[in-house]
Length: 359
Image (tube, rainbow, N blue to C red; front, top):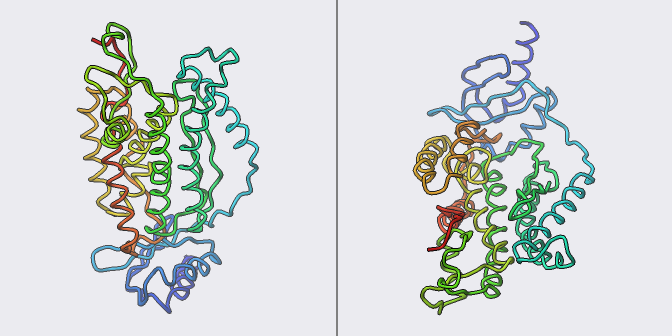
């Protein structure tokens, strides 16, 4: 008890020049100081982390009613780990192989022949879109002082040849501004590259009469508001009773739009979950529950939404707070939040894929 009282006294002393403590609560993992900051928390956060680091503690700032909460965790900050890029490179090479293979199949050629080279444009397009998405997260993580790995691409033998890519963040996110920038950078940058690839792919696509392909099994790529606009922009005079058969580059662009919409769903550790918490704070759970309720009826249109709803239940609706959960967003970040919402609306695809006989 004497050691604990000594620790509490040292912690109170460490913050006394900018935090007036009115009450102290102690649990197994935290010392919670309640009171008022005399300065803006973001101005003293670096100093606060440095001082508490000497006590092997990490600060978490939040607010309850009219009181500021300084919750100090009893565990040492994790040191940045050195990682070798070997795994990243091997996974990238494997994903190049699987996406070239998928691209050849999307081009209608035998991927086990010399014609596999026809899958290279698709591979380049899809990896550029997905890679730029993850590199956006990576660079904005570094910008905001968050330790992050390089992207890990995920090879998989299906129509796209990949399940995308991920990065791992190995240190806490400092504040809501950083959380918003890190969450929004990936989908917005990826979308900016998906749009030109989509336009190029549409311009290279075949247009076939419905009568010629009637009665044949066809895989239909779902439409979004953005894709509908780009289609009208690129192919303004599409004749009635004709269908567009997307060029592989167009499929890559379509996939980039689809992935953007899915990543912006407002729950969990998805990009949309980061953005939702950064913008709405404690209300993020309500928004996640509304999104869950919307996915249920959508599952009757495309069964994949049932899977997404199931994942929401498994991983929950909660998003962990950043270290500084008090400092509000500025106008610039609010504008980024609005841009992310618009991006979600125009890229969301209610029925991503549909397979059946054309009638």
